[in-house]
Image (tube, rainbow, N blue to C red):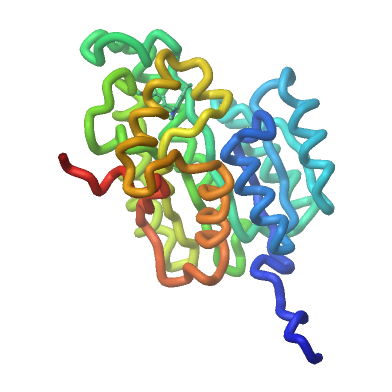
Length: 262
Ligand code: 1JT
C-alpha cells in the first residue's frame, strides 16, 4: 500500500489490565488512553463503589473494555478480577499498577512519628499489591507480558512529608527487581516509572502540593512539571515490544529533576 499508512499498531491484539483509575486526571487513565491509541483492549479495576460510575464512564469510551471491582486488601476480589479477565479475553499481555495509599496524617509532620498501622497499610496497599497482582497475572501471560508500576523520587532521597510513602516506594522499586528476576524466564518484564509530581486526585489531598509543583517545575532541566500524558506515553513504550530488552528498571519521567545536584 502506498503512503505507508498500513503499519501495525504497537498494541494490536494485546490485552491489558489497568489498576488505579479514579478519574480522568489519573496517571492510570493517561496510561490507558496511550495504550488504546495503539490498539489495546483493556480491563479496568476500581477500588470502591463510590468510583465505579466514574471508571465505567471512562472505560466505556474505549473499545471492548471491562470494568471489575478490585480492592487489593481483599484477596478474593483480586482472584475474581483476574477470573473475569480470563473469561472475557482468555489471556493477558500487560498490566499497569498505579495504586498507593497511606493515611493522610502519615504524609504530614515527621517520619519518626509513623504508626505501626500507617506503616502496615502503606506498605501493603502501595508495595505488596504489586507482587499480589503479578502473582495473579503471570499464569494469564501465556505469551509473555509486561507489568508497569508507578514510583516517586521519595523512594531514594528524603522528600519532606512523603514519609512512609517513600519507604513504601523503596519497597516497590525493590519488588520490581525481584519480580523481574523471577518472571523473566516466562518472558514477563516488570518495570517502574518514577514520575515527577502531578496534580492528580491523590496529590490533591496533600498539603503544599502547589509549592512542591512550583519548586520542581523551576529546578528541573526542562523548567516545567511532567504531565500525566508523558507518563502514559512512557508506560505505552514499556508495555509494547519496543522495550523488549528492558526489565527490573526504574525509569524517571520527571523532566530531568532527579539528575540535578546543586
Ligand atoms: C499517595 C498520595 C501516593 C500522594 C502521592 C503518592 N505518590 C505521590 N504522591 C504525590 C506526592 C505526595 C507528597 C509529596 C510529594 C508528592 C496521597 C494518598 C496516599 C498515596 O511530598 C512532598 C506527600
